[in-house]
Image (cartoon, rainbow, N blue to C red; front, side, top):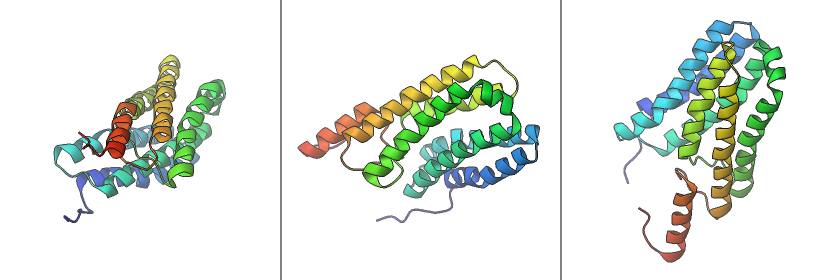
Length: 198
């Protein structure tokens, strides 16, 4: 069995998000809105490219999947707190959307922990799309842009998280890297029927 390398570019990119989370908190606490936005953009960019680099250079590892999932979670928990410190009026104005976004993100994680005792780490197509649209629309919103893109992005995230709930409901055992509910159904059929998964 080949030993997985620990120090890879995708692992470093995912770990970067964990390192940047306290930096984001500190910048927000100090009221450094511009520096916060630049740091957040770097964090979001690292999330966009880590998976691509892992696949492109055959550096996907179990550790990388775990780091990516924890990086996503820590960033997601950090940003609303920072936004509240920096732009409380904006967050109050968008409180319904923010509440929907937080609830939609937290519930599938809680369900995964209840069922599997760990982060689900599905990295679905929907989750990847929602990460891009929520991250970019949040930056626009924080830069005093229109709220509609953020609201639409939140609806996309809700749909993506509903799919993750469906995957957790379908699969009796934990599996990382399940790109869609259709892949979950195929995985379930192959595990019960003994067929290979393509």
